[in-house]
Amino acid sequence: MKYLTRTVWLLSLLSLFTDISSEMLYPVMPLFLQSIGFTALMIGLLEGLAEATAGISKGYFGAMSDAKGSRLPFVQLGYMLSALAKPMMAVWSLPAWIFLARTSDRLGKGLRTAARDALLSDECTTENKGKVFGFHRGMDTLGAAIGPLLALVLLYYFPARYSMLFLIAFIPAIVGLSLTFLMKEKPVVAQPGRSYNFLSMVTYFRDASPAYRRLAVGILLFALFNSSDLFLLMKIKSTVHNDTYVIGAYVFYNLVFALASFPLGVLGDKLGLKQTYIAGLVLFAIVYFIMAVASRIEMFVLAFLLYGVYAAATDGISKALITTIVPKGETASAIGSLAGMSSLLALLSSALTGLIWSYVSSEAALIVSAAGTIISAIYLLFIRTKDTSIKTVV
Image (cartoon, rainbow, N blue to C red; front, side, top):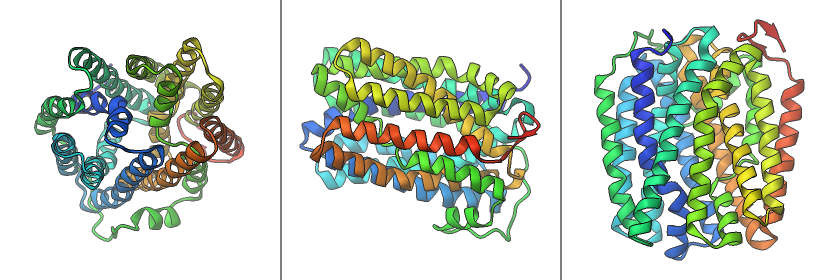
């Protein structure tokens, strides 16, 4: 498989180790936050603010990467900041400090994401974008399955020792960071005339091609209803009252996500990236309807099985699709702009979900997300955007 180049492998292994680190913490995050007094609304605001920080920085640093014609320094600095943020959570449980630590981690993600995906895109041809992004996503998500398993073992022997997990998670983060110093990036033509600021994501959207804007509207509409996964974990916790089931469900979801990412990338290259993405949104809506009414463990298993397939059909696929409709020199800006605006909408989505969850019901919050996603899928089904992966206008 010649398309799995040295750079693709190193970036994939980097994501594997980083996600082992991050995902050791993610499924226990609501448990940790609730143990120090955070309410559902506070958790929604924390996750929304964290994703908004990532979002604004994705647009800014994506445009900067294109302007300077450089990718690797952004990748290195971004992963370094996220690694350093891990042990911060163990130092102090003051809410302001927790907000600072979580947003620092997401700032690191904003620094690296667009540049990393541009590095991946530079290794692709049009015909294998789905495969390359799917392989990377699969490796990334394999780490997201290994991480919670490690957390599960550690919590079995050291119950409720959440702070300890934040310190241990620092180790794989540093291993991943070290891999960035083995990478070499292909030359990219700098665009010194391209401006970049914290409104770069908006200005790029304004100036981009009509095909990009039409696609972006559909993806952003979905982002408006796609709140933090922490709410799904909270739903399981409130129903089965068992930390092991919460972490186990997240491990299962990530295993499905990892195993399905590459096959769905291959399918996306063959059948069309946009069609694959829309199918993923339909699965998302089904999952949220199931979660709204779930009362038995079997229903949660089905929901998280479908949720893993949804993620594999949308995450890497959406990035691959974006890179087929923008010039090579704008890849980081295009990905960063859309990721940035999506993250800002995550602030609103998570906050609204937290409000509905707290003041109406968890069922209502989940059903609203499902209904909004169906609207997004219908919109995307009927828009015209050039999908070069299938050489047609769809």
